[in-house]
Image (cartoon, rainbow, N blue to C red; front, side, top):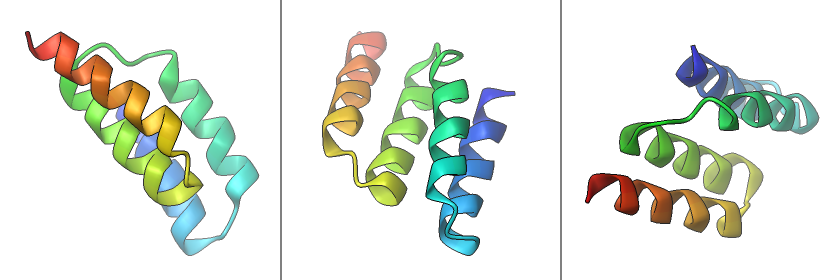
Length: 68
């Protein structure tokens, strides 16, 4: 499940400090996102653990579009 990729990436980044592995997991999850809640979870994670504010903004905008 795609949210499992995000959760595993979060743990890899926070507990194991494995940023490259985290990026790989997030890339896999990114291809499977469909719902606003998934976009939000992804945005929060990439902002927090990768510091990628641009990607986070992109997915928050997708979440807002999906909510309409």
